[in-house]
Amino acid sequence: MSQLRVEKVQEFIKQEISKIILTELKDPRVGFATITQVEATGDLRSAKIYVSLMGSDEQKADTWKGLQSSLGYMRSEIGKRIRMRITPELSLHLDESLDYSAHIQELLIKIKQEESNQ
Image (tube, rainbow, N blue to C red):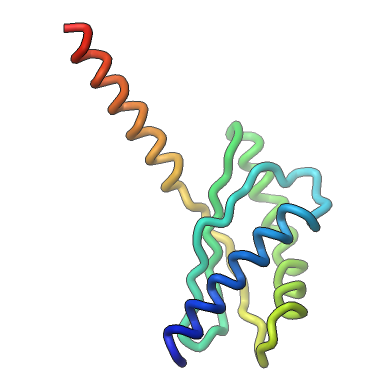
């Protein structure tokens, strides 16, 4: 399948899942979650959704459970909104790159402060 079409579908899924999480999910466990990336297979039968979670460890765990439990609803909504023969099978994956970059930023600030103190 055309790589351009795969990229368009990935972006569409990313936008729609973000809208669903923001406005339609009624699960009180779901807190602050950001869809960072979607990777679909070449045949568009499955898609990995990378999610970044914010908050305390307990809030992250609750949000993760809420998102996992609403995966079927999200897939059915994507199926209604996208004109494809087969709706991709969705799977959630935790994206910790934002946490890692925040940690690196803190370390850089700490090093800069130590250099200015000397």
